Image 1 (tube, helix red, strand yellow):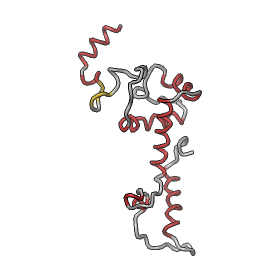
Image 2 (spheres, one colour):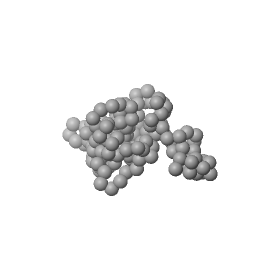
Image 3 (spheres, helix red, strand yellow):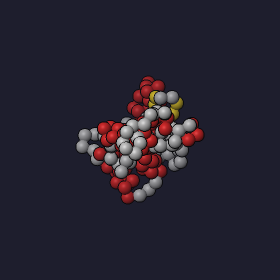
Image 4 (cartoon, one colour):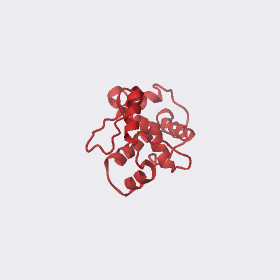
Length: 157
């Protein structure tokens, strides 16, 4: 359910309260001494933690997995989302709009992280926008070379 619904911060804090209580409370519900911070317990075992999942981060990772499937796989839900939300845009270009499905809004929220940390293959080039996608640095070619982009844009029309 973490991959579909946005869990309110208060609920995440309450869940962490109960999960941390497992380590820091004795049998008669008295608090034990905290020998290590919760953030350290949540680190991977290789880094000295216990590998307890950070639920907020886990939710974001699961959403990124849905984005990966939307871009790379074929299926009924992918076709539905592509036709309804992407239309002729790439995932980079799409923005959320009022009235969008809550799941789509969550996908749009994490797409920048997905794009910044992901790598992409050109394949057949159908999903690539030469001028609008980020190729070099954090700016599109249309932003880096606006005069050249305007010439090309006027030639297309």
